[in-house]
Length: 398
Image 1 (tube, rainbow, N blue to C red):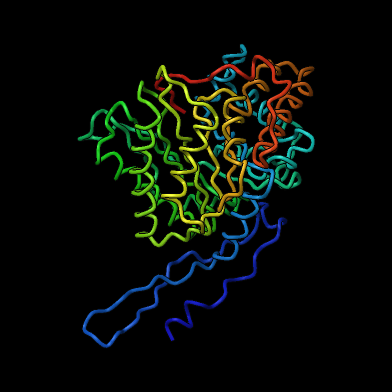
Image 2 (cartoon, rainbow, N blue to C red):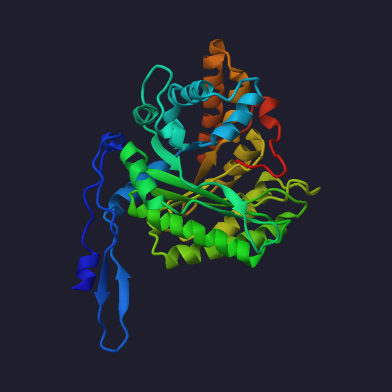
């Protein structure tokens, strides 16, 4: 009887129209089925989430061929830094204008399957009064939401960090679902120059796992982002060694928290040398190390690996992704880029209304390049010098 109840199907998957605000919330309470074996011990099995089918469908939609994620979830403070770089004041009107430029780029959904938003953006409208969530859905782009509350010092560690935001997360994710979000993102980091300590790795893994379980209970596909920071002089072998430990810990705790792997997406760093290492790696070397790590650590049940760019140049991030897609993989290997999609676009715009179309064309150029890289068909021909410039910032914070 217990097994039969576990195998009951979930509610019908919602269609695209249900991404919008106003849909009634489903019950997110967790139920359990208790099995009573013949011996004295008992086993508690977590029942399938009522959102199980929907989570799988959302994850597969985001991890669809030739498409990836536009990460536009910069906090207002970070967005202010981006605006300051082109001489604009950090006002809501300027943030709105820039975000409008991004989401209204014609045909963006051909290359972009999901967009990660900051909370302000999830509830924001475009400059012409349309809800940003609605604009994304019209573009066939799934709206997502950043749910972590940022990094703070980790007591007892080697000057390392932990990510806060679990308090109140269940109520926030339920509200985000009602507003139209269908996936979430939580970013935590591990620093190689600072160790990393076993404490920092465990804290990162546990926080990601708790967030993932809570998100799935609210109907949001969790993007699991254990970022190995580029900071440091270490070589690629050291990055590989640390990433092996981090990813093993992350998936151990995901399993401990009953997270459904078919309903998550992984957003890891590529395996590269530290940004200050003198020995640079070719795209083929990055691909070989990274794919080897994926094969050792990531279950094939995970539908999508959406790599972060982490300060690589626009072209470097695209070349590395392309090298990883020269042969079939068990997962959809794609991108979830912020600066590596937006850098040239932002500079082209410069805050001038007359530059909006040129800026959108620059965004589409980068999106198309990474779409081709996801399909293993990117050549790198005709790239601008701007797109080849590295964007690593030591000690960068979002």
